[in-house]
Image 1 (tube, helix red, strand yellow):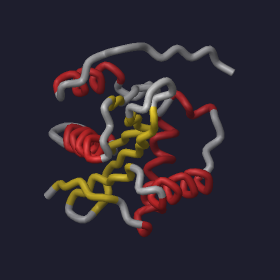
Image 2: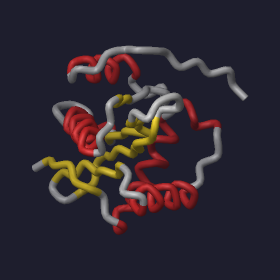
Image 3: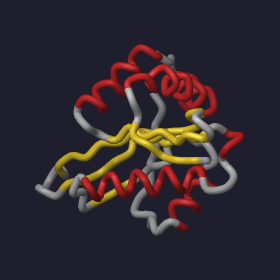
Image 4: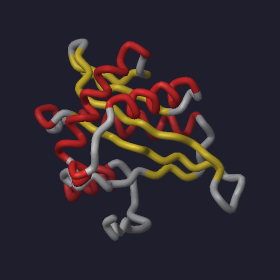
Length: 149
């Protein structure tokens, strides 16, 4: 059985392991990875009741999504933005990713977000991810450009 649930404090080490796998698979692999920094960020998101959801299959965490809601920079409208969505490669077929995306969107709506956005900056399966976002009702509204550093 696959389900999405709110993450618990006891999930933080597992989410950090997933974060390390995400890092190794992504375009960010040239940057140093800090499990400590990620664990602090996840704990802060949890404390602030932001989006920390896990995807679980038969009791094992196989993915997750992190996100926040904030006031738009020129408006009082609330905006939801994801930091990261990740599913282990061996679980990407089927409905796993869609379940996480739908749960994130539902979470954002419950927070009163009028704008709900998800980006693809990792470089991981960009075309497939974009198609999935569009299949679930998302529309492309911009682009991300990296100038290196």
